[in-house]
Amino acid sequence: MTNVGKGEDVFDPAEYLEQKLNRKLNIELLTANRRRREMEKLESQLAMPGVEGYLRNGRAMGLKIGLASCSSHGWVVDHLERLKILEFFDYILTREDVINLKPDPELYIRALERLVVNPQETVAFEDSPYGVLAAKGVGLHCVVVPNPLSRMEKFDQADMTLDSLEEVSLEQLLSRI
Image (cartoon, rainbow, N blue to C red):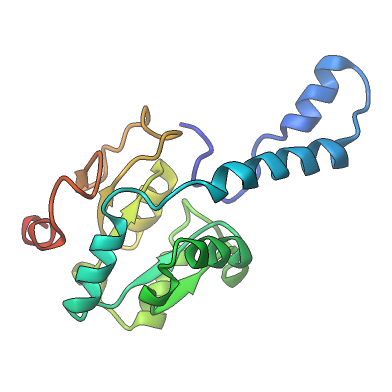
């Protein structure tokens, strides 16, 4: 299982590289360059296919919509604003809001409390095995739409796996679950 979706840093590539090269590196410069390249790539990315439609349909159906991410609040909000979809979320929880990160279900527990919803009537959309474990750990229905980094992972505990949210409408998905 990869580290995608896991909040804790379990592998430090800079430390590993220093060990392999047997010398110290300018980690601050390497990190700044990596972050700059990541941001350049992210700025050009659109929302995954079907996401905006699900959000619009969910809002039209009167569903409560929350987001539970192991990423930082600033990172999440910046990207939701850039994608022009921030307005659809009733509540956003991130790594700053909990002590334990995925696969621990604490993010989902807090989200359920804030949204005042029943786990059995809630669907989590995930893209990582750790996210699935967290969602199922609190009794949520879980639909997986893997990202390019997690496509090869196994999602045995998920209730449904889709290549894209465009495969089925939100209404069809909810009727199947």
